[in-house]
Length: 71
Ligand code: SF4
Image (cartoon, rainbow, N blue to C red):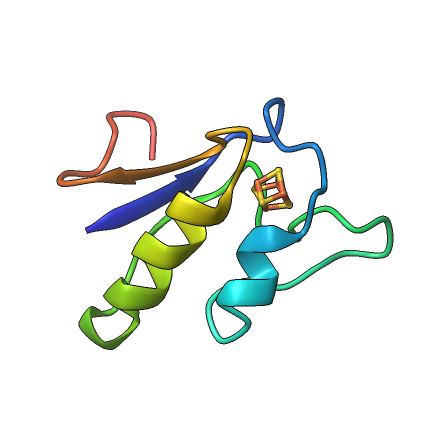
């Protein structure tokens, strides 16, 4: 599973890294530091990825079965 964080949708609510601090982190301005990135989630962090995606009120976090072509 891949996680993709849309940098333009992220408004810095901070819910994602609050519920999944072992997967995501915050930057100096309160945005998720990994915004704009797409990477493969280790199996042991899948639950965190789902929780983070569910927690985002902007739907900025997408979970993808396969890597996007531009990743
Ligand atoms: S919860 Fe969503 S909007 Fe808030 S920091 Fe995380 S990705 Fe950005």
